[in-house]
Image 1: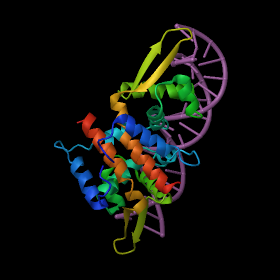
Image 2 (image 1 turned 90 degrees about the vertical axis):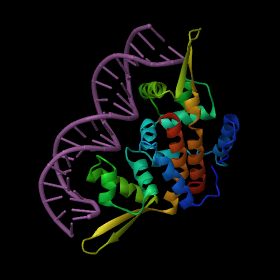
Image 3 (image 1 turned 60 degrees about the vertical axis):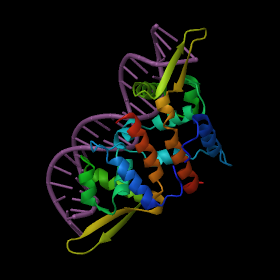
Image 4 (image 1 turned 90 degrees about the horizontal axis):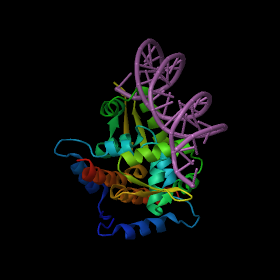
Length: 121
Length: 121
DNA sequence: CCGTATCCTATATGATACTG
DNA sequence: CAGTATCATATAGGATACGG
């Protein structure tokens, strides 16, 4: 986005986006979809490096359990953000990657990262 | 941000941001801070219109209870994202608005809204 | 009008053990 | 290796009533 916008210009731009023809809000359902302690982190990790295997993902998400990771991945797959590919070799393994829909979340992380750099570090 | 970037260029840019001198991730703590069923929605509503009073906010956040809204607002205030101003007139009221730190979250919502428009509507 | 106090419930997450 | 099954727990959020 154009970084020279003032806050008010920016807000107006966002507001105009929000007033979709049907009057629906395009933010709420996205926020809904990304809810949970780990989901954003999982997508984020896959943004940085993909594909990742179940075990690799688990190691990066320090503290997550099998159950929770498994559930989160299934939901992300159902929402079409993550692609799961199973390899029935020896030893068997599974690779997770982002779909195009999932990759398109990257601008969101970019915005988050910039905010974090400004206000946390 | 520049919208002509390819995904790979974009990812590289994000990755370079992520590798801060200390090696800390600027995304994780932000995601942490914004967690909860209502927080993003509250900030989002204040982005669109501010100031908002407790009751107005409650009406917009359909279904939220006093307790939950109160807790969320206090935490947002503690994190320096929201400013609370109390007017001891008759009738008394309180106005909530965004701090500069909170307003700077707007690019994040912009990114979310764009994604939502592309994939939901 | 803007909350807090209290209690309650649901949902998300965690631990451990075990299987295709 | 990548999970599932089972059970346990923590935390967030909800309902109601009341107070500054």
